[in-house]
Image 1 (cartoon, helix red, strand yellow):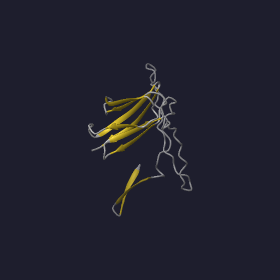
Image 2 (cartoon, one colour):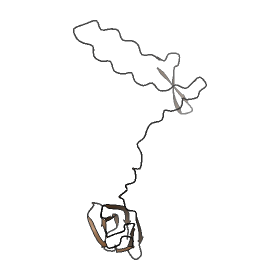
Image 3 (cartoon, helix red, strand yellow):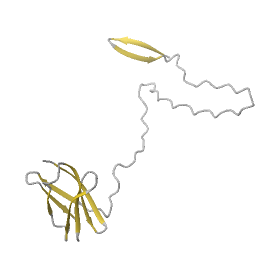
Image 4 (tube, one colour):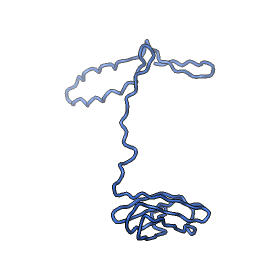
Length: 154
């Protein structure tokens, strides 16, 4: 049971501690034996009450899933630099051998592709004909791949 108090325009709900029910009332046993009794539902969890000194008990920690997945050993590291004046995108990756560099649009379709013999040398791509928006730069060298998101603007 609760009563309502209005004080200086604020609305307060206060429980009546003397009349509050703290234990569920036990159910009476069923008098008929023709039907089996249904399983009783589990009692609802009770909110933590403050201690006598007014301190709240410590909250129980909730286990969370890890935010970042473990690093992939086959992932390439990619660095991109965009020059908005000349509309040139410089791509660097840590691949040792022949490398394929793709720029994919937001649907995942390749819109610009470049093959290089050495992935460690910087590759300069002309992105002037591409419309502004988000793109994904993907580098592939054998079994290793890496991706980097870039936003092209005009």
